[in-house]
Structure formats: structure tokens, C-alpha cells
Image 1 (cartoon, helix red, strand yellow):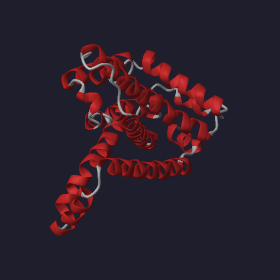
Image 2 (cartoon, rainbow, N blue to C red):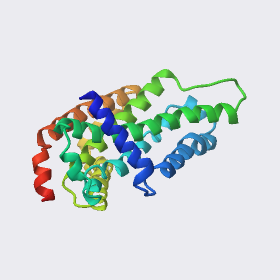
Image 3 (tube, rainbow, N blue to C red):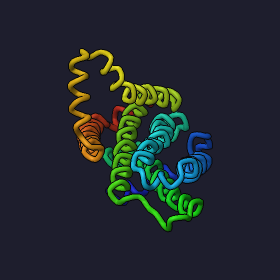
Image 4 (cartoon, one colour):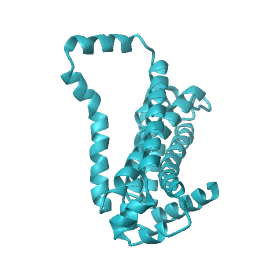
Length: 247
């Protein structure tokens, strides 16, 4: 199964870089994101990019956008290109297909994110050599990469589930974008709808926690949410239903 998932990941990555030919994926997006995350933003912020954990944390969500463009193509794009029938007729199991599609988006997007953060460290040390070599603190680096990975996995699972039931890639992209915007603005909306005294008590509790505790709590929440959504995806993904949709 692991070998089959690896083969499917390689197929997906090949298509992203060579065959799909859209500006949201492939080589151009890779270069743009690496340039933004690994060169432009670090030069704008200086050595503080590596010494202040808040700066890379702000940009740790960027791989989510890369995953969004890839994962929405997972099944809807195959349907548009009339290659879904071939995939479903293969010997691959349902779980292999599902995990392969999700893993391909995560490997592509998160891999670029990791490369971007490493490139940023090189950029800072080359552009601002005064003070000697500098790197992220190991704790900051771990937290940034963990949050980035879990957020990318979250949107990848959601994207696959939406792409399964979308007729076109554009439709899947629009639907997942709405979900992503809802996740971003939900805390803001909740703060407006909840009673002021409830919001006040929550803010007091949060203010008593340090940044490290809050971030580790966020990692724990994302782990649980990702595990639940993966379980739902495994339970609901059925090759026979896709065959019926095609026919």
C-alpha cells in the first residue's frame, strides 16, 4: 500500500508541474511562493525574521494556498480530463487512492513551505551578515513547521472531500475557498455574536497564557480535527459512488 501511495503521489506531482498548465500550480507558483517566503519577506523584515518567532508564524499559512489549488483538482480535475475512469479501474484500493491524493497535496505544498523557510534563513545570513550566523530557535522552527503541516493537511482533506462531489475544478476551488474563509472569519464572527461578558472571560483566560502554550494548544486542536476529518473521509469515500457519478 505504501508503494502504491508513493506511485500515486509521484503521478500527481508530475501532473502539477508538467501537465495541468495553470498559473495556480506548477513551476510558476513554486517560484513565486519561494520568492515571497524565502527572499522578499525575510529581506523586508531583516534578522528579526529568525529571532522573532511571531514573524514566520504569520506566514506559516502560505502552504495552505498551494494545497488548495492542488487538492481541488484531485478528483474534479480527473473528471474534467476524463482520466478518472482509468484511475478507478486500476488495482489501487479505495484507501490508497484517497491517501495518495491527500498526501500529494501535502507533500507539494508543505514541502515548498519547508524549503521557503530554509531559504529564508539563507537569505537572512547572506543579506545581513553582521552578528554572525543565525537560525530559528529549534522550538520556533518545530512549531512553525507543525502548524504549517497540520493546516495544510486540514485543507487537503477538506479539499479532497469537496472535489469528490464537484463537477469541475473551478467549482471545487470556489467551494473550498468558501470553507477556508469561513474558518478564518469564524472566530471574528463568534466574538461578535457571543455576549460581551463571555468574550471578556475568554480573553482574560487567553491573556494569562504565554505564546508557546497557545501555539501548542493550537497544534493539539489541529491534530484532533485532522484525525476526525481523515476518519470521516475514509468512511465516506467509496469508489462505487464515483463510478455512478461518472456514468
